Image (cartoon, rainbow, N blue to C red; front, side, top):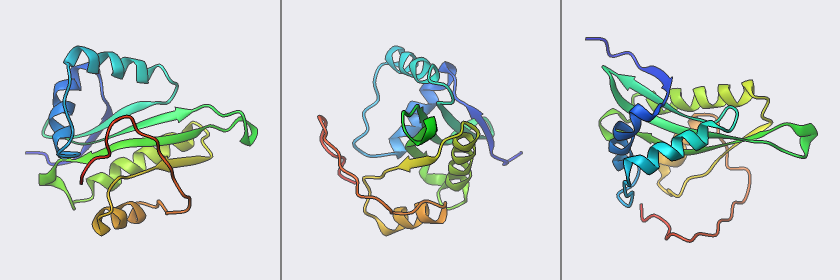
Length: 154
C-alpha cells in the first residue's frame, strides 16, 4: 500500500469527497447541495490560477485548501492570493500534509506573479497559529471582517 501524498487540482468529481473532508474543518460547517458545490467549483476555476488543491493518500482526499488569485490595480499589476479552507482530516494531522499543501499553494501563487498571499484563520488555538507560522506565514497585519453568517465557534 502506497502512503505517499498525491496533490492534484480538485474536479467536480471530487465534490462529495471534499464535502466529507470539510466536516473536519469546523463543527459548524454545513454541507450543501452537490449541484451548487459543483457550480461553485467551476466558477472558482474560471479565475486564472485559482483552484481547490487536494491531497490524496490511497485515493482518499485527506487534505485540501482553496487558492484564489486576485487581479490588482496597484503594485505594478501584481496579483495577490487568498488562501481559504485549509483542512486536514483529523486522522492525518501533525504529519506534515497541511504544510505540504500550503507550500503548493504558495508556489502556485508565486508562479502567477502574486506579490503576497493572504491567509486568515478564525482559530485562536496556539497549535493552529504555530502551524501557520511554521508554514512560513506571519501575523503582520490587522484584519477586519464583516459577516452575514455568524463567526464559527472553534
